[in-house]
Length: 206
Image 1 (cartoon, rainbow, N blue to C red):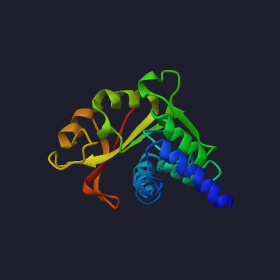
Image 2: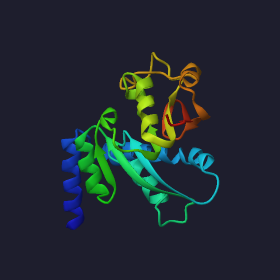
Image 3: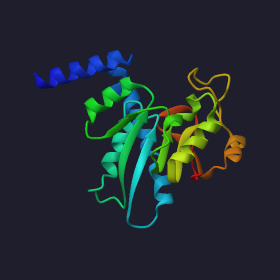
């Protein structure tokens, strides 16, 4: 009975956010987790030696699934050589309510990144978000202002402009990576994104 009530409450929160619970649990959630897991090799390259304790901001976290994976795998009490305290951030308060229901102990900020001027994090992660942003370059500049050490980005790469999904406002290519000064670039085919390649890269702080 308790499990049924818990699922009913979650379904209500998802319905308020305009997200179908089954779509989330079977498609969106696995995809978000996979996208975050695919960033781990880049984090290992950035922090090759033992041990590190860092703070992380996950920008565009939505329901916080990817943030929660990172917080679990890199928990400060874990064996991980990179130990992280993770903060999730999204502009949509409905996403925060879902995240609080699923992982109440994880900090979740509801904010526009351009309005944050009193905090920084060691690592700022933005996974599959910049393709949804109308003007990516100032967005990346602000991410760099929020980071003490590294900005870590993942996004679809070389999408066909004629077939890319409507929510993706841009198709990124090598010229974009050159323009923003991308470092530690990896281009690969992801398990949960069949429409194009994916690129991960890092940027230094400002």
